[in-house]
Image 1: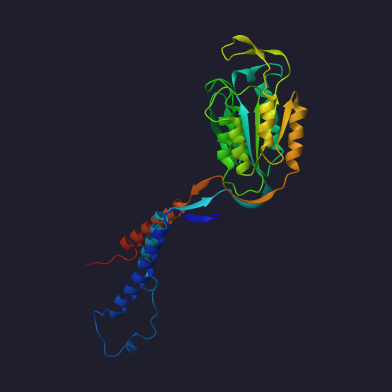
Image 2: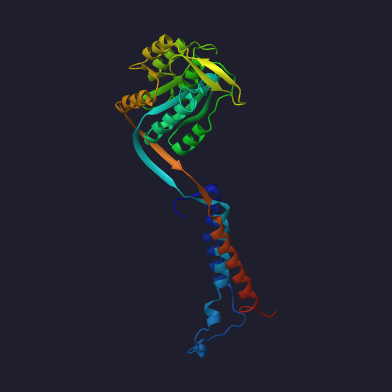
Length: 328
């Protein structure tokens, strides 16, 4: 029962009933008068107490054990099977990934989106001490995973990201705004957003430049990445339809967005090496201490106390009916 806690700790206050009941029992026992009175007890010298006499208080002791065990069980004791507290050096990072239809272009193998996911996964695996979140956007944006130190869940969700799940288009401002909302209140000294896209802003209600200014206001560093090679590429829709995608990255806008933030940069990603250069930049950033507490699994521990109560109650009944049975 490592790190035992109680879901209802206030129930434990009822344990004070046990010493009160014991005190009442002792006072009551002392006040009892003998059925037969003798002026001289010298006649009984030399007689030793029997085992039954020595154990005459055992049933009541067992009853108190039952009461105490039931109270503890009702407080619902629990143990944290994998509780980990640590201070880690890290930063808060949000990956904002474009999942529009053009990200299915096959100039990156197998597609731009899958290549971006692969590189992002490598990045996450190399940043074990950082809290990382995931935002996806196309014609609209939403948070896939809030910033977390649990990279297992993050990688699982990243693997399931695909195109066609939300309205098509490219809403750069909305995607960046959602990412900002994830880390704007973070206590980390270094906050980073990496935004990957292959298109031109054509959707959304927030201007990308205004969103970038908002990032600067919250002290967030922005890296923008234009994903795609020059020219036309083949893409396949989820239903198998084949279509062509022209590379129309608004590099001027992406450069401006990054420049609004302190030391922000724009990168053009035509292969994985460009993305790895971003990661080397992040490694040079200032880090801060983050207090992290992980609770992987909680286990109820009331059963041992319930078993103790049942066994003690059964013994009390058995002793009362057999060993300490009295005849009226």
